[in-house]
Length: 600
Image (cartoon, rainbow, N blue to C red; front, side, top):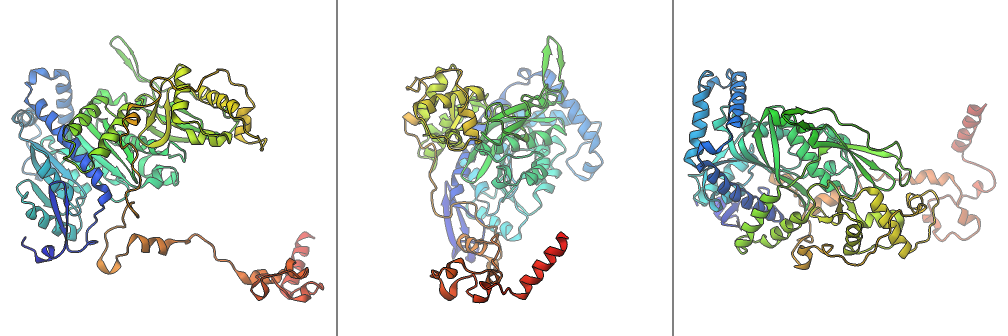
């Protein structure tokens, strides 16, 4: 390498890439995120293969009506932004819309490879891996606004000999994507956003800068916001209220998908989720973006609000819209509601209202199956392939049409009863005539199409087999158990209750890989840098209010009065004998006099 600083620094090998750092903390690197990068590489590789086959198809195989609609949309968008884009050399005249569309089609027919943008590249590791491990890549733009990161990217790109594919960029990621909105031929086939924290500030530009049929890969690590600890912040960032519930990790995915769909709809575009995962300390979604004004009209029917009982945790959905099709007639009226009354019919509790969130499936089953097959065909290619196979296997088993899930330990916690095994509870659901599955987002999850009344009836049947002592009369558990179950179920193992991924003992839910494995601190200057442990110690107990020990000295010690205070002089209460003879401190007397005057 040309830089001695890099040669004398730290080298990290991941996949086929070797990345160099001047020291271990100079640029953000988290080894736990190798799973994230491996999965992203596999997804883009599969997408590139399918896109290459699609581009080789003759135009006659495509839907002509969709092409006409997209051509009209491109023409309108082009006229709206013609003045802004007039300074760009690659922009045609507004009247040359046909040539613009034919140029885009020509690019597709030639199959010249895909274009990728990594908006926040840091060291450039992800971009270098994409260039080395994904065939059919035309160009990759590795962008970061940090000058240090930009310099590091240049060195790592040269070190891995991928400068003919990867082009470093030092620009604001949002501004860079806005520049590539028009003409459509300048848009990226793949945009990867993996920021520190929330990606909300980049979503508007991302849905415009991705090509029609291209994919967005978006990561958010602000799980405290998305999982209900700061609902007001979630509304400000994503336009939805998050809920603090056991299903919060799947809801976080659906809130992010709703935000993406909402941004895309403003530009006559819509999303199709391919894969959505909630693992470790972040959520990540892989979505395709398409252009269709007619499909955008269906968007409201894909979203819903969530009513969450604050007593027992039952949840209900309120769709935002409906889609009514009768022959050639299509109508999209508002939804009917509400789905429930003001109080929970099981425990009498009140409801919290969350959302809007994405209600439709969060995975594409066919894409997940193809992705799982491609990873299995090369098991030793990726170091985290075992975890990828386990995760995708669980996702394959998830019920696609059942948003959110119950947590079995939470259901038992409400009733204060023993916890059945997952096989037992799923067997009971199956015997009742409903479907049940697990969720990749929670080990104790129960996804089912059974209504909440059936779920609680099953728990009542379980409690009858394993009775508990009912202590609190006004608790949600007592209210639920006061009702007799309408159905009777058996908890013996049923076919389909034990998932295949569990039978094969796949790596479905990985344990914490190392100490301090969560998100690392932001990259800072060397003199301001601190480790995760140092940051934890600095912030430990910052919300604790310091006690004013002197204020206790005005009160007599009860133990000293009986002669049994073992604390002696270290006791925070007073051992002054005057307090026991009725002689109070002057400040206490003043306080009592002021209270008496106030009462008069």
